[in-house]
Length: 117
Length: 109
Image 1 (cartoon, rainbow over the protein chains, first blue to last red):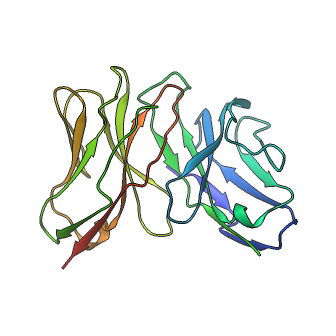
Image 2: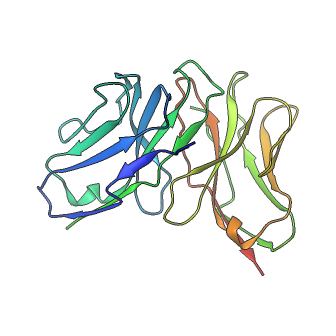
């Protein structure tokens, strides 16, 4: 079974530029998550989709971050404009079940390392 | 959200069992305990999870105390490749994983 795919793996941009990350979850997984991991910290959830609907985006800085999962499969996360403090690893994860499933396991992709100069 | 407490770091000799503790004294009755690990420059990797009973899989064993206020992840025969940050997480409603700082496990030869 193929895992969660993410691209690009690395990205370097200047502040105030825009950037987009792509994620393809494990086939058949209903729920998709984007996390931000700043160096030295654990991952922090940014947004959670169930199929193509947003379940939780309470931690997403909506003035500059946006995400979509139009057909309920792959997803893109965009930052516009980027700030220095956005330098982090952006992780995508997916899980088979629905929001109500306590015992549902999330599987993570390798992440995209963003450096903002 | 139920909070977990883990030691910041631990060392283990190669070939020995690694026992990683976690306190979760505010856990609710229907919340699972999950363990993930993150090897340098990789995404978090699922290890094991449990609700009340002890669990074992090909990677590790999870021992949960009867009152569910603490648990221990056991890697039976640690290898150098087990060096990683280990996260103990209490799974809240909505499938959210709230990561703490984790425990840095260093396996030494």
